[in-house]
Every structure is written in C-alpha cells, then in structure tokens.
Amino acid sequence: MITPAGIQTYQKQGYLVVRQLFTPDEVESYREHFMHLRSQGSYPGDLVGINNASNDPLKRFPRMINMHHWDQVSLQWLIDARLNQCLTALLDREPYAAQTMLYFKPAGARGQALHQDQYFLRVQPGTCMAAWLALDPCDEANGCLRAVPGSHTWPLLCTEKADTTSSFTDVTVPIPEGTAVDPVFMDAGDVMFFNGSLVHGSFPNTTPDRFRRSLIGHYIEGDAKQVSSFYSNSLRMDGTPIHIEGGSTGGVCGVWVDQDGTQVVELTGRRPEPVKLTE
Ligand SMILES: O=C(O)CCC(=O)C(=O)O
Image 1 (spheres, rainbow, N blue to C red):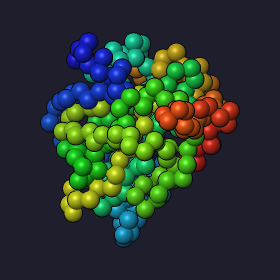
Image 2: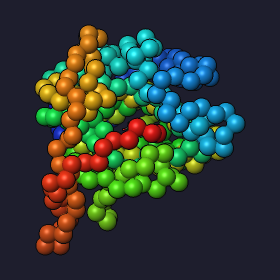
Image 3: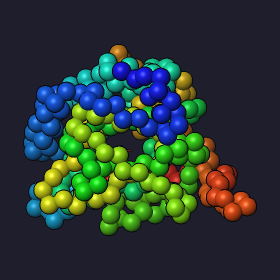
Image 4: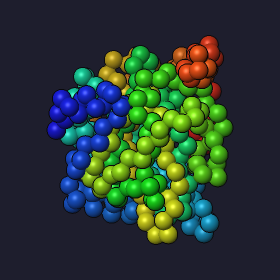
C-alpha cells in the first residue's frame, strides 16, 4: 500500500496522499451516514451548537468531533486495517488512535487557518499524525487542504490570532514571506497522511453549491508518554483502551528570527498558549 518511494516522499514533505484507499461505495456510505447523523440533531462536542436558520454555513453543518465514542462506523473507520497499515509503515510503529472529526465544509464555509496539530495534541516524546479521508473531490474552489511542504521539521511555533472572517478557528502560526503553501488536490477516497508538526490548513469554500466533506483521524506515536489531557483516553489499533498521561504542555514554542538574511525558528522558552476548545 505504501511503497519505499512513498515513505521517502512522506519523510521529505511531511505528508503523503494515498490514492483510492477507500472505494467509491465506502465513501458514498460514509457521506450518507454522516449526513444522516448531522440531520438528526446535536452531539457531544458540537461546540458552536447547531442552528439551521443561521447565515453561517458552519452553524448549519458544524464539524463533528470524537464520534467514535458513540458511533460504531466512526470507531471502525478510525482503526481500519488499511489506515493502520499505512500509519505503521510511515511511523515505523503502530500508533494509538486519539480522535475522530467530520468536517462538512458546505458552500460558503470558512476554512481553518494554518496550524500544527501538535499544538492541540502536545504529544511527548514524538508527535501526532493525521489521516484525512476526502469524502468529496477537493480543489481550490471548495477549500482543499493546504500544506507547507517540509514544515514538519519545524519545532512547535508560538501561535498568533487568526483572521476569523476566513477561519473558523482563532489561532494560526506565522510563516516567512514567500513560503509555498501548496494546495492538495484529492479525489473522494484518497487519504492524506500528515505529520503533527506539518503546517497546514484550508481556505474558505467559495463554491455556490459544493460540500468538501472529510473524515479525519488523529493518532499518537506509539512511544508517547504524555499528551494534552483531552486525548488521554485513546485506543490501541485493536480497539482496546489505553490511558496516556495527560497534562502535557507541549514543551516550548518558537518564533521566526532573521539569521544572516534567512528566517529560522528560535525557541523562546515560552510554553505554547493553552488550547481553548471553543470552535
Ligand atoms: O479540513 C480542514 O480544512 C482542516 C483540517 C485540519 O486542519 C486538521 O484536521 O488538522
């Protein structure tokens, strides 16, 4: 499933798209399943609430979080053997499964400002990893993922305030002027695996009528000793529970400084801001 060339690409750019890991029939049934769940009301973790009369598309279709705690389809997907095989090949060790999310991203929805997932998960030692399954074709118009290739080698960056007119989250990380932020074009059924330090995010969905739905799993490297408390109750990839010590502050964060005309990250000695789970 993952070739040595794929592992090399992952190590170089911090992400890898595995094409058609899930079949069109599977993707269709996930779309139907989650649209049905969303239409049935609200769930734990619907932080912005649900309001079908709102002008904000994200209030009509808020993202769902940690569905695997109460939904078997989400649980089975999170620990799917194909995901495990790819993650294990890329990480060199079986990970722990920490989180599920479903982004509906309907027409007109805001994106998510550039960030590092490690800011949220704070895995120590090591990092986290995401598996991001496209449930619709993803392109620039409907707000595909964007990634800064190679940024997985950067330390955790200190966050700044994001522009909440284009992002539904309010934190972002700065990147040096001129840094490439590549669009990642995907078809439904493709999975992008990415390192927890990779700087990534997405712009708004500017289409008049297309969703950009995605099913996301977040994983913790298998030798982790501490994580942010929110992720303490994780799972082994056979579905059995594992408790990882919570309370990780994530070490210290870095800022960009000029060194002989080149921008480099200098660690500040400052702890990253506490995560506010409000979005
Ligand atoms: O799907 C998006 O637009 C952003 C998702 C993301 O950044 C994440 O899963 O960490």
